[in-house]
Length: 474
Ligand code: NAD
Image (cartoon, rainbow, N blue to C red; front, top):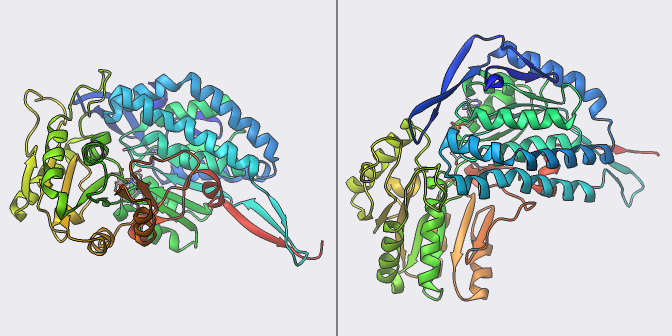
């Protein structure tokens, strides 16, 4: 792929100023599938200069013009859907059925969510006191994304920037650059004016930090680890940028004995293992009412043992590999930590599944009898590892659920709608999924506490990219 060694700046694919490169590796085969150019500060300067020049005109475009462009993006994304799905299958190991149905699907789903929101969005609001409040694009935006949901994160940032009339520089994860190149090709074909969208590949501490510090970038939108999000915030402080953060999670999933245990516990295990456990909002702590604890352990063990692990190229509902060796080693370490901490290994364990020597495949693993002070209950493992924690009553469940530095999502399984409302109101999380209620495109997504700030998607996702100006005397 030729464009993998170039950057998209000012409407053209250009040679990087930095000479550095890095191999891109397929985690299922451990084979090198490409070489990506890694940018430097000078590459960032060039992209920011292009975005700054383009902002003057693009910020003055009408909502109708921007909606037209977004609809073109939709048509082209639909045509290049399979390219996106195959790219994520290769670069991060998403099994192809899931890569199409969830990873690539997000590119279309979020886009429709933003089109719907922009259609409704009011850019001028007359206040009761006679003043006029104008919502304007904030300026040049720096966008940094992770590798675990590549298209989901890119579209959640690039599209609201473009929808509101901002211009932007995207730095995708250096580990998943292929889908980002395809997305840049899609935006190029849609006909955005030169400099409105720019892509610079590279490493976080180099390219990402240069963006966070850049005086001509007005806002940083970051998704990734809490560690890197903190670095972006510190780097951006000097120039008083707006910073929005979508960070990690250790989401609780509370199982009360009045739910349909067979159905809800199996689904809960599947949800934790989805994307090989590499989702920020995965329900990784299963809090279980004592009265149904033994039965839940039986169902969960069976569900984990029946979770198939397999080749991402094959169609099916199996999970794929972890995305690289570092991640594999980290998950192995955390499984060992769980064993050493005295939790009961209910399913899975260390090592690769039988017969899978090549690729970063791991066993779907469950620990029972976990206490919330154990590292496997507190730290984001980012692999298919579930920790089961017993509780005695509703108050204790809520207290364990909230006893985490994170607050991205929470999950509830109960047959009692009043209890669902009552408990949801006390959970400190940006989303509460009740009895399997899934995320819908266009709804706000984001977290409390160290899971970040701001909300992505739909109307609230647009809001993050807007400044407010008050007109007095008109
Ligand atoms: P990461 O923090 O290592 O990297 C994310 C991005 O930040 C990459 O593009 C990386 O190059 C860049 N980066 C790293 N250090 C940086 C620095 N000092 N300055 C600027 N940029 C820097 O995370 P990852 O391993 O790619 O992704 C996994 C993490 O992302 C997990 O913690 C997961 O929970 C989180 N995540 C959160 C959400 C959400 O919406 N809350 C969604 C997906 C992933």
